[in-house]
Length: 362
Ligand code: SF4
Image 1 (cartoon, rainbow, N blue to C red):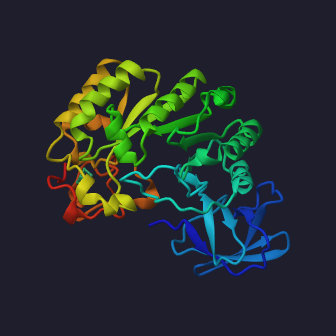
Image 2: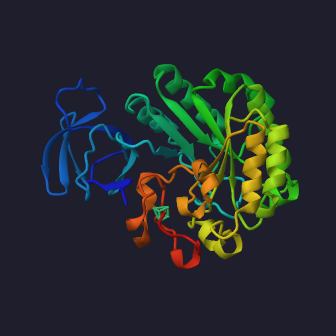
């Protein structure tokens, strides 16, 4: 697995520090750049404005132009941006107002406001980067988040954002601000689990969430925003998927696309695995009908986090490789598979003993 936390030599920091690692000498250096001086085994030494910073990596991979967040008293740095990856995400808060049965990042009460540092990290990102924003629920800190987006969007016209939000905190007064970010600069990833309000509310652990979500989606619609609707396939909503597809295609036709996702076995997803995991390698019909319904009405459906061999061949084109490189793995039987190059495989924390029962090389 790729390290997103890197051991660092202890530094006398009073406040958080953002640095960008530079391993090449032919680039223009800025005030936040730390320049490679020496590499010895797994330790690399950088010069940061006259201070020595030691960073450790096991993999030997390039860290040129990576952006790190160093915190006072912490022996490891957060690798906020990996310059050669398309999967960079800022976890801006661990607070959330929902309690979803499949939550991969169970909420915490405390919030550390790091938006100023995230903004700087985004400004230092490589050209044309797309940065994910997740939580917790990022819009619990809507005004700080919006400030950060405005600064980066204005200063770096090449940077895009993908924001995961439960859309519970968008109000009509936000329409102008959301519109100002630009349709092509921010993609809003919003979860909807069922067209039946009580089923959706039960899955997200919040009474009234469906109704509030409808209002939030209407704000995004009126702002002309790009929206990716996200649905995790669960035992709780599997048979509802065709009805959800009807609802989406008749009421939410403005969305950019629909992402139907397999369950991630981590956090509450692990705790509730037996209750919630739906083995789509043995039963796919309701999902196939749902894809057919939205496709017939011109909405693109994608299958995220589905191993290619868990999807019947007529629907395999809907299942691109989506699991981030740092949390992806393959199993022994994948070695002889002709589809391995295009298949996204499994999450690192997937347990095949409790997982899909009808997989195999293609
Ligand atoms: S055998 Fe492995 S690589 Fe091949 S489609 Fe299945 S999960 Fe993917």
